[in-house]
Amino acid sequence: MIAILIHQQLRVRPISDKERSHGERMLLEFPGKGQVICHNTTPSQKSKVFSYNVVFEPEATQEDVLEFSGVKRLLEMAVEGFSCTAFCYGQTGSGKTHTLTGPPGLVERGTSPYSPEHGLVVRSFVYLFRLINERPDSHFILKASFLEIYNEKVIDLLNPGSARKPLQVRWSKETRGFYVENLFTVDCEQLDDLFAVLEEGMRNRAVGAHAMNAHSSRSHTILCVRVRRDLRADADVTCSTHGKINFVDLAGSEMTKRTHSTGKTLEEANNINRSLMVLGYCIAQLSDGRKRGHIPYRDSKLTKLLADSLAGNGVTLMIACIAPTRSNLSETVNTLRYASRAKKIKSKPIVKMDARDALILSLKREVEALHAENQHLRSALHVQTDYNLDSYSHHRTQSQIEPNKLYQLSQAELVDLVQLHMEENTALRAENTELFGIRDQLLRDHELLSRENERLLKKLEDVNSVCTRSPIIPARPTYSGSNDTNIWTNPATSSANSVASGSSG
Ligand SMILES: Nc1ncnc2c1ncn2[C@@H]1O[C@H](COP(=O)(O)OP(=O)(O)OP(=O)(O)O)[C@@H](O)[C@H]1O
Image (cartoon, rainbow, N blue to C red; front, side, top):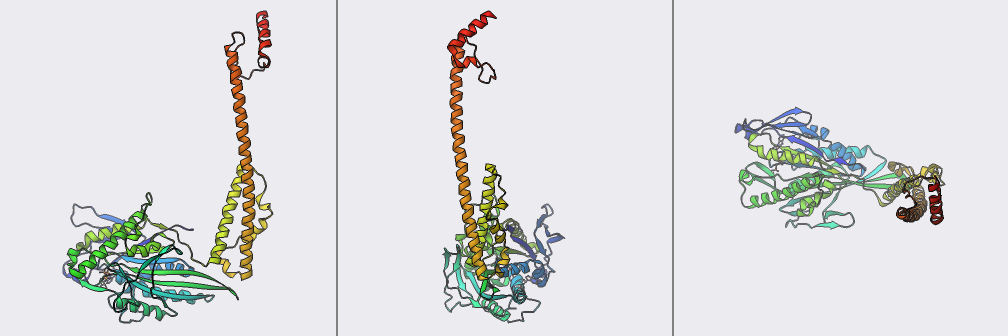
């Protein structure tokens, strides 16, 4: 199992026409190597330097983001069976939606998927289909869903209904994760199907206008593409992996004074800020390696649904978006800090596969653990047998099969393999039990010997004290190595002898 860092990137949008007309200037400097220098407003304040895995400068194109953000690797992992998430965050108007889906209205207008203006999502769809077409040995089933969290309510963007009835977020005992009940999923056989899902969802999502963004997202959205891969290993055998990729467009944090929010927009802003605060708190807790205590995922719908991506078995790409001008300084610094913190989170990605494949792998791991335990016991007990010559070493050789080769095995071979692992486990367990038995016996013998030793020492001390008290026999120190055994054999007679010999000497 690999532990990896959450991949943290930064995208800086260009200065907008409106900002330029207000005489705003660039506040950031890019010295390279993933660094950003943030110059402060007054000369007395020090500049701050932040570093990330990758920094996209204002001139970066949408294609650059696809190529250098690592999202391609994320998609490859989704195809291999990992749970992956790419999300954008930052203050309102910083370019999150632009990064994921391009300028306002582009997708909704049904623009060709190959337009250079498209963001990461459409580009990812194109790349995903390229990956699938490059793997003719596998059969893929893609299913997509698209939801938004608006005012703490989950709305299905593919099936909102006229009443926009919210869906329930529930806990699954089986997967040990949260899920949205009755969420609509669409089978996507072609690129156009995925594109249609995106288009439909974008049309239905909540968008509003305020002083800082004429097309502001008023909700968080999660577009999920599940990738089931059936690998035909043999005529009658297929192995399946279940990967997924989530694209998360967070609503922007807002200073309601600056956005001049009132009424409905103010309520939205409060809900947005509250859920982002919970997300920030979860990130802070996760990134603090020293005190990994309770993580408050349950405090918002957003964190419930992102729990798996942040701390579970997934791989996550986070793109922090910032505006480069002075008027946004305090929010920019907040985002930069938030992003540095998220960089410290570690996760342990695992491939989700079918029960049979998982059983073989878990048995393999158990065999390895038992081997290690066995070896440890042997060396502790100084047992000299060469383990490789054991009767079941033959099984060991057979079970050393790489996980990806499992797909090439036939049904009968897989059954044999499981049986071999089970036999090997039984044999190892029996031997371990025997070794534990020997060890216990040795411990008992050791205990008896210690007690006997103590008894003898006590006896020795008693004799010694008798000798010390005697005015005739000289005391013999307990550590003495004297060869004179007479004093222990018969104190009464030997005392007489000693006196006699002493006086004669
Ligand atoms: N890299 C960029 N290049 C050109 N224009 C950009 C870029 N980033 C953002 N913009 C433009 O800036 C405006 C605001 O961007 P966008 O709507 O993506 O912000 P946002 O962070 O999603 O805001 P909100 O949180 O309010 O939804 C849009 O008109 C968008 O096209």
